[in-house]
Amino acid sequence: MNSKLKIYIGTSGWSYPKGEGTWKGYFYPPGKINELEYYSQYFNTVEINSSFYRPPNPGYVYNWARRVPKGFLFAMKLWQKFTHPRMYRDATGEEAIISQADVDMFKSSIEPLARTGKLGALLAQFPPSFKNDDYGRQILGAVAKTFGQYPLAVELRHRSWSDDEATADLLRKNNVAWVQIDEPKFGTSVAEDVPVTADMAYFRFHGRNARDWWSGDSETRYRYLYSTEEIAELTDRVTAAGEQVGMLFAYFNNHWQAYAPRNANDLKKSLQLPFQEIQMHFDSLEDDGKSQK
Image 1 (cartoon, helix red, strand yellow):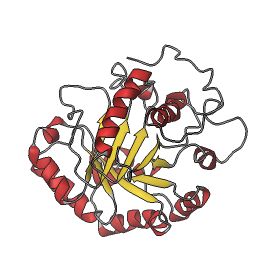
Image 2 (tube, rainbow, N blue to C red):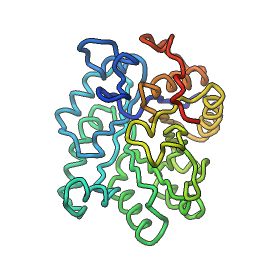
Image 3 (cartoon, rainbow, N blue to C red):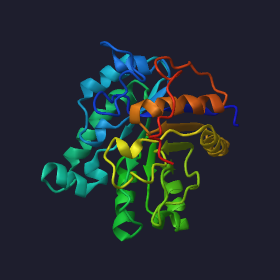
Image 4 (cartoon, one colour):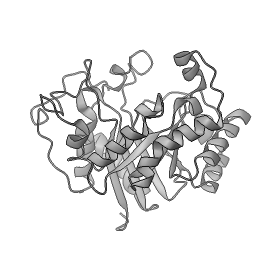
């Protein structure tokens, strides 16, 4: 692997306090702790997923930046108003009509990370229904233009994008990273391997729980623990991309009962990166039969 490559491995989000899929007692110890500070002892990056639902208060974001060690980077997910207009309308009752005030508000929420050098990337995740048509290309181009001042990664999930060679050209032209994802595959799914299109690579590992992917909820859909053999597969993909870039991000989103930090540590080990052994229940936690293959 490229000796100058900077690798950042972590999870999609760090706070899962409730429900069956909680991280309490699996990753976080009992009692009152600052979860982000605890998390940052083990990993050098995390995705901020709460920003998908609403741009966070810049004061909160500055506090997050203040609580992590030097060299720790955040990736922030773009507000759903820019990428999921139907979901935004269903959640708010308002049409997703973008204004300059919306852009300014979101950029304001990013500013504390950009100012302190802790913004690793901005993630624009589009829904599986987002297709490569005139409308889709227009929206993708607008996102790239509007947020091109930041390191930008785009998650495209419909196969029409990977079926068209022009997609990679468009992303390369704007130095936008095409997110490589691992998730259950269906007839409309984007290709498993997509080209490297920027000076950074960006991976998201959602798990392979095909049985619950469409019928499960926001917890059970991600109830999947990657095996040793599957981690080896992901390692090969990360290594290949790492030969082509200077910076690489990899996030595990299989967040059920802290499977994500467990597998993130597995990937660090597989890549022979420095890691800190996770304590808590991981040493004795076994696959309980709920990891859907």
